[in-house]
Length: 129
Image (cartoon, rainbow, N blue to C red; front, side, top):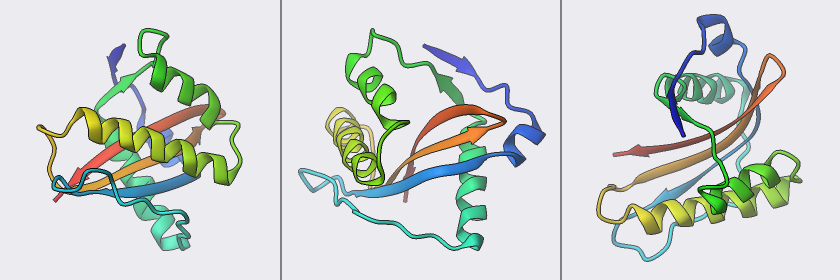
C-alpha cells in the first residue's frame, strides 16, 4: 500500500543504519551478483544515510499480507542475524530482478534496515546506471 513520504528533515538526519547490503543486477544475467559482506566506513555511512534519505522522498509502502513474499521477509528481516539478513536480502533482490527484467537497467539494489527515532524501516532501493 503506497503513501507519500512524510519524513521531516530532522527525521532524515536521524536515520541510523542498522544493516545494509547491496547486490549487483545486470540485465543480461539470469540472477544478480550477490555480496556476502559489506563493511562501510563512517564517511560511507553518511553517504548511504543520505541515499536512504533520498529514497524516503519517494513513496513508502506498507507491505501487507496482499504481498505475502515481501510481507514474510519484512517480518523476518528486522530480527535477523547478520547472516540471515544477507540471505533474506538475496531473496528480496532475486524477487525484484525476476519481476522487473523488462523494466530495469544494470545497477545495484540496496537492502537496508534503519531506525528513525525508534521506528523501524526497511529500505529497498534500486540505483540504475
